[in-house]
Length: 159
Image (cartoon, rainbow, N blue to C red):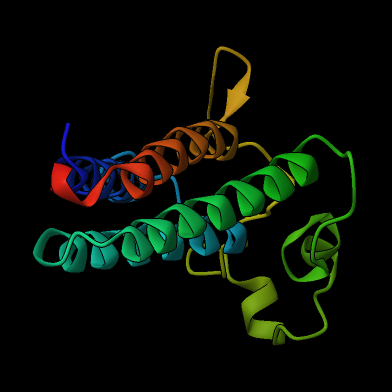
């Protein structure tokens, strides 16, 4: 495959993962936690980088795309560790957040139909084959990073 083709493949991979995340949210009803939202940004960056790379398929652009997926894999690994209790996550979205009710008004606390919905980062909302969405995203991000870096190593004459 040419460098341009690999860049486009990587960008389409990020687009598919981002669309899947939106599908789980808007069709499946699984509201994302803060760390889930963090994982969307590198995919958005990779899509933009792929658009630039389609026009100018330079090795440096492919390296940028690969780095965006390495960052995403790191965020996904961190999120997976928080879900599995391997380490502490941010207090703003872990079990402690559900107990920090000081910021809520009395009417919010007593509301039975419109109370705030806290999505915790340390709870697995969905899993397949024992892996959470964050874990699957991490694996996919590693695969996409490898494609980006393969694109960077292609010779310029290969496109």
